Length: 60
Image 1 (tube, helix red, strand yellow):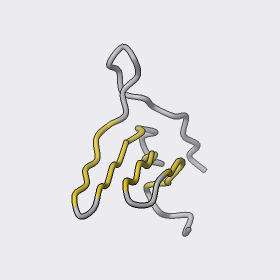
Image 2 (cartoon, helix red, strand yellow; image 1 turned 180 degrees about the horizontal axis):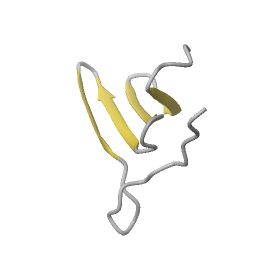
Image 3 (cartoon, rainbow, N blue to C red; image 1 turned 90 degrees about the vertical axis):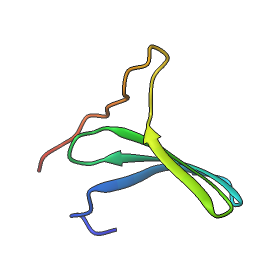
Image 4 (cartoon, rainbow, N blue to C red; image 1 turned 180 degrees about the vertical axis):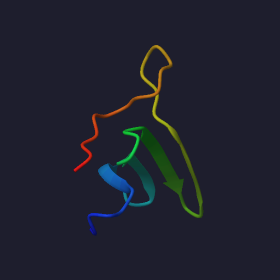
């Protein structure tokens, strides 16, 4: 992966029904991506209180 790519995949499971977590390297916002066959979608990952999950980012 090139170091200048904005999104980083940090978790993946499945082959036909894929669930992934991606982190925006600029904002730290976590996203959930789910794919089943030819359909898929992405949405911000929320914690149990309904707040967006944000990971620490390093600006180097």
